[in-house]
Length: 158
Image (tube, rainbow, N blue to C red; front, side):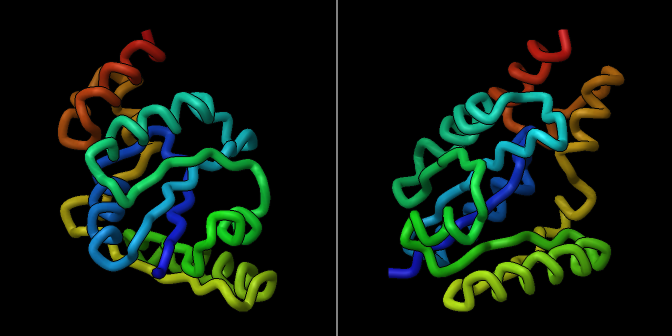
């Protein structure tokens, strides 16, 4: 069995994230959506709220689990018996940072591979940061996130 960990902040989870996970379920036996605490980013949602939102989104997928984490990603990956870290690439600008992360992770844990999936073209521009900004300014975010996420964003932003 090949298990993959898909780490991220997911603040909030978007259709781009969801698309990547759905595609990954066809490649890997199990996919762990690893929700990073990311306290340095000052997320809109707490880690537990982000975990709950992602669990709701993926509740129909038997081979997807959602877990929060605040330790080293390679340690988390080993703890979940995964041999792959899955990362999404939206644009060339993502590659440099992701390449650096993959190199560090390979140095720390040579037995764990990083695999990149390119984002579906309709989501190439989409980021959680942009979704939050559009929502803060009163814009329509229905094309970017599921309904249950919209409701939680509206509640958070008032």
